[in-house]
Amino acid sequence: MNSEARKTLALVGLGAIGRMHVERIQRSTAFELTALVDPTDAAQAFAHSHDIPWYRSHQDLLAAQHPDGVIVATPNRTHCTITLDFLHQHIPVLIEKPITDTLEDAWRIVHTEQETSTPVLVGHHRRHSAILREAKRMLQDGLLGEVVSATVMANFLKPDDYFDLAWHRQPGAGPVLINLIHDIDMLRMLLGEVTQVQAMKSHRIRYLEVEDTAGALMQFQSGAIATLVASDCTTSPWNWDLSAGEADHYPQQHENAHFICGTQASLTLPQLDLWQYRGPQKHWQAPLTQTRSILHRQDPYQAQLENFAAVIEGSAAPRCTGLDGLRTLQAALAVHEACATGSTVVIDHSPCQ
View 1 (tube, one colour):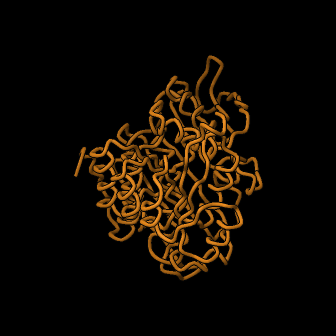
View 2 (view 1 turned 90 degrees about the vertical axis):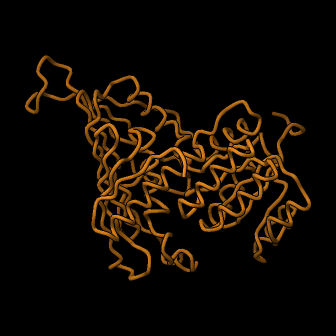
View 3 (view 1 turned 180 degrees about the vertical axis):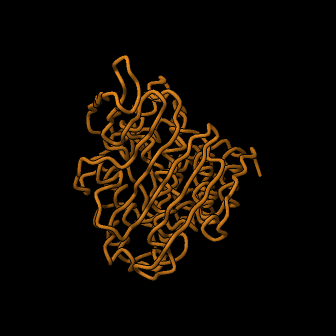
């Protein structure tokens, strides 16, 4: 796509994830960043230094511009109001995950998306990963047989200054809704909808309002059961970001953090190791064969931008729709509810609320 055909794109929010989006937009041939919205002095200085028009609020932006698309990368609780304002102006939105912080607001976004016929792409960027898309193909081709169980680890160490931001210390900003929600979305993509959740959490390391560790047991409509553990206070290589090698700012560890077990074979991620019996005997005393799929490295955030450009053009559907984002949020919130109640949470998959 030549520069004259580039789409205009606004970015709302210049936190860590917002700056990451700026880097990807600058490398993109599909978009030109024509607006930056963030009320801070640092954002204003950043916009000035990069010759990007700056606005204190998204209302100010809408009074001055009508971009082809917008990325909303603000704190979770603000997603709904900002997104609705853009949808009512028929401007497609890429919302950072989670889609918002409550199911009520998530339904408002989904309904407004439908009413305005304006698409929403939710920023569960791993759906754009070549690794995950290959895993999906392998499951669809039946290589694993019937999936029985999955094990997920999302264990890592966040730096102390991460918690300098007040909202990072408040409920909803812990590893369940910030990090494990990605893994929940991955499981939904691979295994289908979550039907029941049991869980517990702890904040005994940092003693903040938010959890620093959580564990969950999930059952899917297929009957498969998954165990998930997330912690942002551990020294560990066992998480997707360190293992997948899809982002330069994470040192790749060449470990696996996701294990999917089926009746015919099992699959590890992100290394894409397929374990299966090739001989006539198929039982725990027979030898297993290990094969690995090797893929070219790909930046899922860049692929997400490409999908967003196609969504704006109307030539592709969002790989993570507003309803996808809502269902993933629903499962993540069920983890918190199960922790609070100590009981099994049954998830309602009614088509609308």
